[in-house]
Image (cartoon, rainbow, N blue to C red; front, side, top):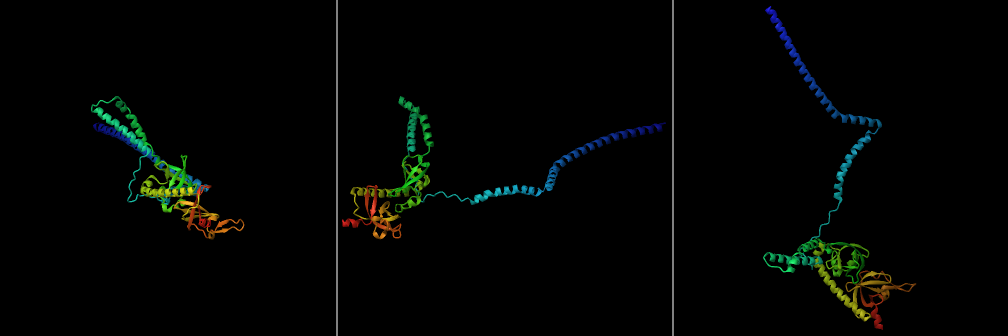
Length: 374
């Protein structure tokens, strides 16, 4: 009986152990199934994310191959890359083709910053600064214990307004730094410059040879007509004097100041001499006693123009020219210039006379013969 009981107990223990083993195995199996499910789900997500573009691309390619558009699609896909590359390279090419900016003008070695008379703006600034200094002197005296008069105390109250006014003037733009549009109206005679119609100005303004860009020397005034023609558009500044112009920048004007002032002085001397000569001719009313040398600057059918006294151009009618330089028209019998004989640059001698009717000076090559005959 004891052996039977022990065998029964062993069988029961084995059954309990088996039951416990089954439960653990079930738990282990369940956990393994759960992990396998999660791995499969994750794999499906990864497969979906990784394989979808390829699948869609393959389907799209298959569809395009069926319609014959696959090759065109390949070219279309390649084109943006090529366009992008071209776009990236284009600025480089354009940049290479663009000319380098002109270097800024450099001042000469002996350049000295010119000292100009104060402008209207600078004068106003000086006046305001003086008033403010006077007020500050009164403030200092008051702080030191000095009793101020009533009018002095009233002056102290003006300081804020003066400071504000000074700030406005300091921030204002100097008129001579403003660039204006202009049109050449005429070349001056005597040829000391050109006259301009400047935007915003009611009167014509002078651009002197001394302040042209670059300045023109007195012995080369003929260069003016090569640079400036009637109706030509220009960009100019009104100089500090408010009455003349320049087509130089502010810096260029400063750098050529000494040269320009020297030319301006020579032109003034020439202008004074020319005026005296013209006044004498106007008062005399006859041909001049002395001859002047001149250079032919223009040849026309019935006249020539000769530059005399360095700057003035005078008209010489074909009737007042040497016979070897003219010929008569067989029909009209009018004397005409022999263009094969008279050339620009030819040196000639003239006598001068004031033409009241046309308000100008004229010249003649043969008047001495007429005077001698008379």
